[in-house]
Amino acid sequence: MTDDALIAGAAAPTRARRIASGAPLDVVWIIVTGVALVTSSMFDLIDLPAQRLRTGDAPLRIFVIGLPLVACVLAGVAARRRSELLAAAATGVLAPGIALAGSLSVSLFLDDDSAFADVGVAVSLTAALLGTVMIVRWFVYHPLSLVIDERRPMRPMSHGATGVGLVLVAVVMLTGIGDGVDVAWLGQTAAMLTVPAIVVGGTLFRTVASAVLVGSAAATQIVAVMVVKLERSEIALDSDLTLRTGAVGLVALAVAVVLAAGAAVRSAPDDAPSEVDDDESWRWSLDD
Image (tube, rainbow, N blue to C red; front, side, top):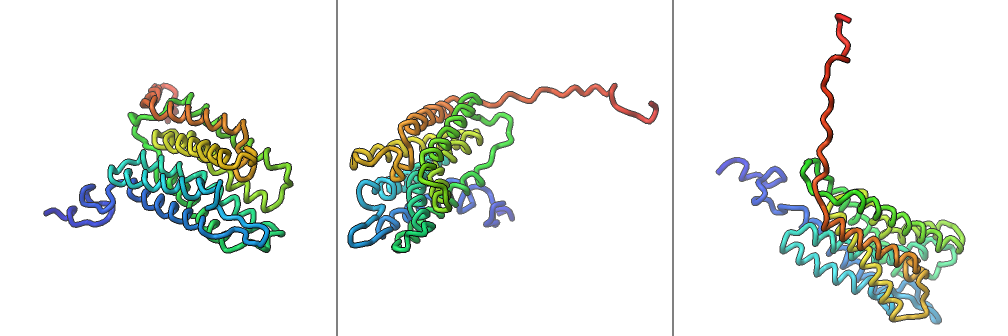
């Protein structure tokens, strides 16, 4: 047996490591965040005699119960197959739930008139922060490969999806600006920008896994918003309870799904860099 076979850290041979790829770490974060979101659904954000709000009640339960359960199932399959693409899809499924839990808890936590906020605010805020760390960690630990022959999404599709992401950012910010800008509005808006930020960041990242993440997050938000509308038709599409998506936002999300799917399927190595002219006639020397 060689010395390398005894090493238990990252320098060990792949088959000797306890975690041989990035997928198992992604799965752990997905399950922890999913459990945190489901737990947050069990506590009241507001508990008054005439008013009660809990994200686990209809119609919001799709965000913090339905989506986390789907994500955990996908994460289990990803762990079994050690698939980073399935782990990326599961991460995207959690994004709308993170946005909703974060937007409601932050707005209640920072609002001067919300002294009646219940313990659910702290629990939901913790779940949203865990989800935010999970997403940031995903981008940090999935760096771009420097190998020239690495397959990447086509540039036009990636650039188009980036533009769609910026449209989503504008929709979220312009829809809620009429309510007045204060600290609570800024915190709420920042949480609602979770999916638009993933669309912009994922398309600029230009990897197949990031394209899967973008498509999953955008498609999941469309499904969640439509489920909320079906369960409670009086809630407007540009309501805070539908993440200020609006009709324009739904169209933009659908376009993002199409572009992300195309980017994930139609990928190819980038063109090799052009050769540099190595003519030495221009160089300075002591004889000049």
